[in-house]
Length: 155
Image (cartoon, rainbow, N blue to C red; front, side, top):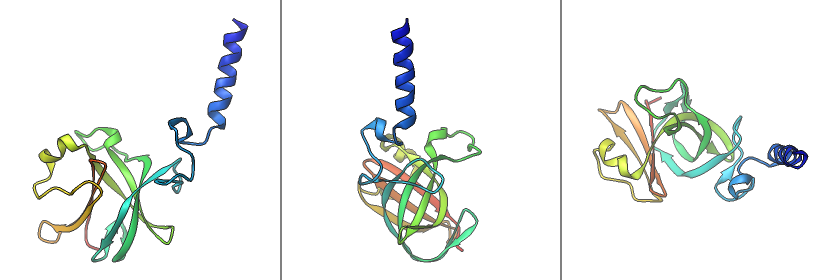
């Protein structure tokens, strides 16, 4: 009994001391994993060029080239009919500095045909396009067969 209690205490202490992601075989600073503002870890999705200014989370995000990274922060409140882990915040960075944040819809490969009407984005690629009579700019990133869709109104 004493041994199992001691094992539990040691295991709990180790979990507290392990940096986020390390339990999954990652370490802070590995490629594709960066610390996010207010998040335990963030994963780089790719680089996109926004052809015009848009509003990201109500703030203007100017036209330009941005690195996009997925945070661990789940979007709240949840949209009706969505799974909570499939709506997450992404950050747009320039020079390592967060310039804006917006919610991304995460769509597994097997579900993308139900959602996207236009041609698919190849794995490792991205597409930025205006939709609905210039009402929304869509950033579509395909990383490893998982699709990340970000919709923002013109700014």
